[in-house]
Amino acid sequence: MLIVDTSVAARWVIGSDDPILSNEVSIALTLLPHRLVAPDLLMAEFANVMWKKVRAQEIGSAQAREAVAVLPDIVELIPTAGLADRAMDISLRLDHPAYDCFFLAAAQMLETIVISADRKLVRRCADTAFSGLIAGLTDRPSWQA
Image (cartoon, rainbow, N blue to C red; front, side, top):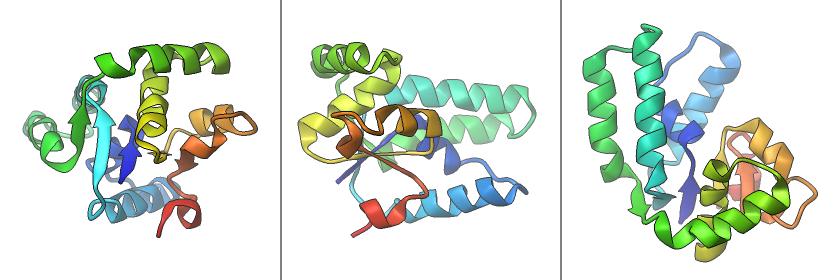
């Protein structure tokens, strides 16, 4: 079981000519056979990313709607409410936005790790008590079994 954040879920939908982003998309797709879990906050964040992609004319509205509709079939969603205290504690200790910390709280609660393409979050957790809760998407050897 792995926790995925919105940065990873978005990689399943976007394509790119950029070789770095294209590599991240390919790696994100290798996660699909795993049991994937995320706080239900993922739905709100993911829908917002899809809206931005439609506004930027990177994807069509039908593709955005379909992506949002199928996401719960791909990722098992857990209630955000049960993670709030833990997420707030992590947020205060990291001095980082609470949104991201809900994913870390889920990993801590379920004794697994978050896979994230959010380099800022991965760096923020480095050399802290939370470093073992997260792995960068491109750091496959650390999370792939």
